[in-house]
Length: 317
Ligand SMILES: [Zn+2]
View 1 (cartoon, helix red, strand yellow):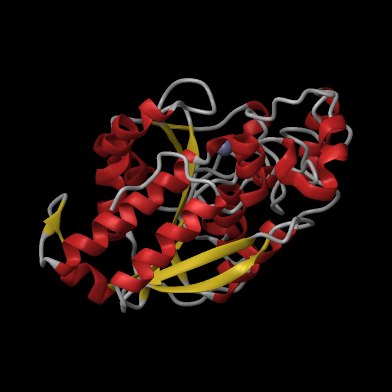
View 2 (view 1 turned 180 degrees about the vertical axis):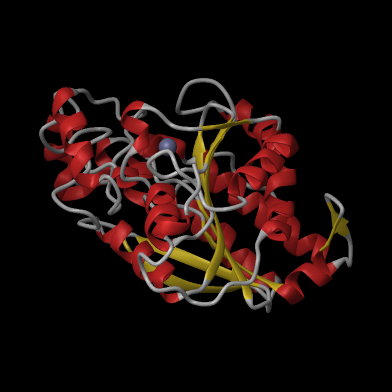
C-alpha cells in the first residue's frame, strides 16, 4: 500500500480504513478527540499479554512520524499474512506474544496546521494567527490548536519548566514550547495519559523528527536496564542515545512515563534536517527506524499493572 510521507487527517483516515478492511486482525478505536474535534484513532493488533505503545506526531511539523507508523503497520500486516519474517522477527510468533497499540498522530490539529495552514483551524484561526506573530505560514507549527506544546504538557518537571519557559519569553499560547496551564490540560494528552494508565504497558516509543537521537531519561535518570536497551536501539538505527538538555528536558511523555509510571519509554528523533522534513526524507528515514519498529517488541518485558509513583525509588543514574 502506498503511504503518503506526511499524510493529512483525510489521508490517514483513508489508509487506516483500507488496512482495517484488508486485515481483520487490526482493530481501531477512538483514543479521543483534539481541540478542534478531530478524531485521534488508536490502533491495536496482536494477542499477547505484553503491551507496547507507539505514538507519532506529538508535534505539528512532525507529521512524517504518522507516515512512518502507518508504513510500519502496512508492512507488518502484509508480511504477517504472508507468513514472512521482517528484520529477523517471526511476525506470527510476535503477534501471539505481544500486543501493539499505535497512535499514528496524537496532535491532528497541529499536523493539519503545518500541512494545510490557518484555514484548517476553523474558529481558532484568528487566535492561531496572533500566536504565530501574524504570519500566514504555519508550516513549522508544533503545538496543538490552543498553542500548547503537547510534549511539555505531561506531569513531570512541569513546575520547573515554567521558569525555563518564562526565560524563553513564552507566557502563553505559542507555536512551540508553551506547556499549558496545568499538566494534562489538553484533550490530546488527557486522552493519552488515561489510556496509558489503563493498560500495563511494557514499552513506549514516541516518534519525533528530527536529530537521529534517542532520549530515555526522566530528570537525568532512567529505569534499571533502560540504558542497555537504549544502546541496542541506538545500534539498530545508527542513532545516538542521549540525555536531553535545556527546554527539551521537561514535561514530555518519556519524562512522565519513566519518572512517574516506571514504564521504559524512548523518544526517538527520526531522520535529519529541518522540520518539517521534506518528502524526500521519508524513505531514508524509514530505513533508519525500520529495524527499531520491528524489533523493539523483543525488548519489552512482561509487567504487572503498577501503581503510580511506586517506581520512583528504582530509577538509576
Ligand atoms: Zn517533536
